[in-house]
Length: 86
Image (cartoon, rainbow, N blue to C red; front, top):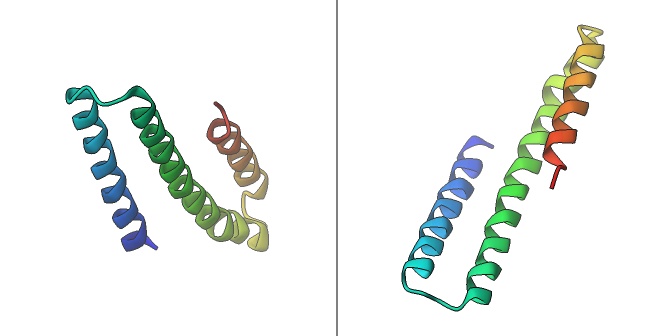
């Protein structure tokens, strides 16, 4: 999973550099906003992948082993609250 996430993040980094160039070049505002939406969506997808991995890994393991399960569930709820804020 890590190589895929790093590849996605590098692509996002390139998109952000492209956005900087668009602003520098005085590109049309709507074009810039469309690209910002694409970057936000790409970052959101990376976040979802990490959240899924954490839930299926750390949280599921804590629940299976009955080890700090309440703490892990609370941590998951908090991160979901932060992740879904606009």
